[in-house]
Length: 238
Image (cartoon, rainbow, N blue to C red; front, side, top):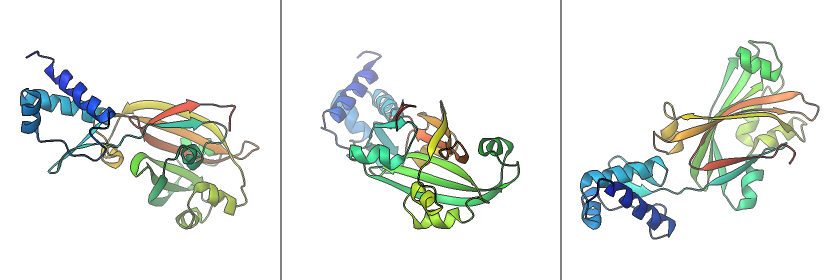
């Protein structure tokens, strides 16, 4: 038995997932059963399973077992008009979201600069999680000036999208003014909220949305699962 037996086991399990022999949600055999199946030691099996969990192929749930993870790889286009539903609906991906909370806070200096308002001005910070086909793909916070959108929280609860809320304020169209993306290790409860392995990285997207004349109306910081999304930058496209 080679010292790299765990790599062979990882490749075999991954191939079964790719071939559809192991469907999303399927429970893997126990560690002793896998060891017997592959004629390997439990250490090799454990290392192979851990590696597949880190890449998002498997989900190890304490007390329940190891399951094949649904992994929709989303090609998310960032252009002049960046909208979640507009990106994913045409691809047949069921988009949903949940509001995690609202709070009113004084604007930190950096956020105030991005929104072109006074530091300390009151903001409405909205925390949301987005899902694709029922699987979490992002968590984040979007900031609006309270003076401009005084009852944003109430309207967002009643409407199914931020775009709809803007329309209720008389804003029929808006543009992506700026986008910055960087990768980093997951922090805090991000792995739990995104249902991914703690060693899997995340993509941090900071953005500013503006009116057609360039006036900023919102800035956001969104954490995306690197295993489930890839970004295409098309600044000249809608």
